[in-house]
Length: 398
Image 1 (cartoon, helix red, strand yellow):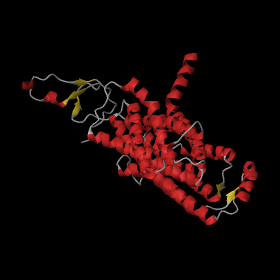
Image 2 (cartoon, rainbow, N blue to C red):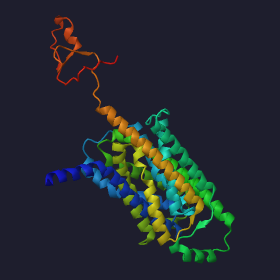
Image 3 (cartoon, helix red, strand yellow):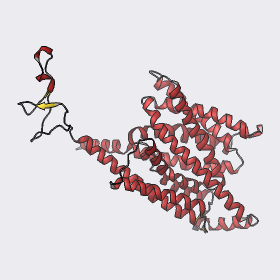
Image 4 (spheres, rainbow, N blue to C red):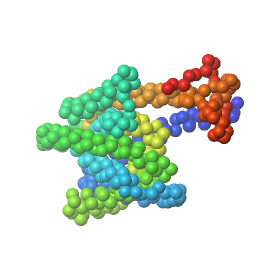
């Protein structure tokens, strides 16, 4: 009895470990959003933050890659280097810089809600890259298309319609205090910043989706060297981010960092949400595919909304809530379609396939290769495959 319970627990963990991994990542991402928002509000340059973040990420994961994966490293040819270079450009440089800029102009909850467009973008890109097949006659494909449409509609609603502020019980006092202090700020300027921040977040999400799809290709080369791939992406991304920072920031003082929130934001983001997340999401993509790996982001939005309302007394607008609801509905429509596809593929794999070009001899428990009936001058020994044949025997499809 004890052994059976232990076996059941082991099977449950084996079947759920990818879900637990993605849930843990959402908590890590949620903490990063809150800490980073505080750091950016205190004046830290997001260009410098990206550099320090991926420098910490490289320092955290490179030693493990050297210890565990230094043997039989894949040869870095020019096409492979180009893949890694583009991954670093999409993730550490484009995605992170645009995301931080959008986060600074909006709010952590809004940024997380906008990032839920990621599965729909990933699904569209996977179709373009022929990693996903679509057949509109099947319900699962219809669910994916409808879900993608809903997420795009939700993102547009969040971008174009802000709406009134929704007051929370625990933030009502802080909200009235903020409104009295900021009475001189114009609504037009705030709406303009909100719109620009929304566009920046959409661009960041597009780069993130491209990263997921391209990473699925790169993992084929680094199948047994996930840590090495992650460290290379972080290292090259750090170099690229340094170049971008020198171009965009001309004040040497922006590089100054001490034992403060700026250091915590860079270290936390680098170790937790860059090095660890890149590695874990690579493992999940390898087993479950890029669409599955993006399906848990609504959890991050909920966590950030709760933390942001308590810690930052964050304002939540009606347009954001309505758009987020549409995005979440669309997200899980895409996820449901993906789940149905995986079930169908698993059933198809379990069905025994007939052996083309072979026929059954007198013994119903064996298959004899058709070359056995050729001339004996070949002097080839006959090949017998001992497999069970259902009654009546299956016919080979020509």
